[in-house]
Length: 117
Image 1 (cartoon, rainbow, N blue to C red):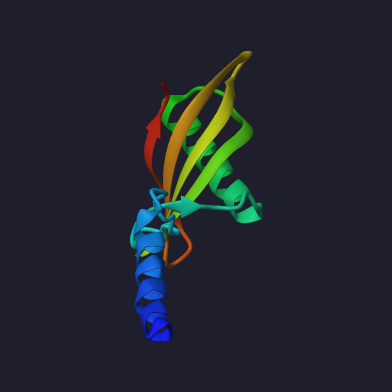
Image 2 (image 1 turned 135 degrees about the horizontal axis):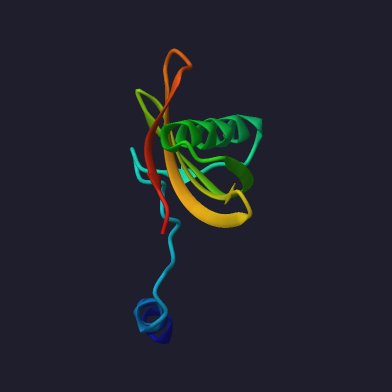
């Protein structure tokens, strides 16, 4: 009789231990479909950053120069969007900018956004 009593008691103890844990389980968050994801700062990102600075310099008539790529993200669209946080020099002044460049399927690029805080 004691042997038959042990099985339900062990099962109950197991269930209680599972529900007694007050630590939430952590699950990996998948990348948001259609959202931006981190991009490695490679030669492609460098080309895109150079393009963004040259395009903005031409549009404003200011002598902008790329100093450093601080952060790069990529989004798959009809082509790729690159969202870059960069440091640029305007003469002797350094400033941060956020640029978005659309690299189209045919390989051409367009600067779609340029913001400076």
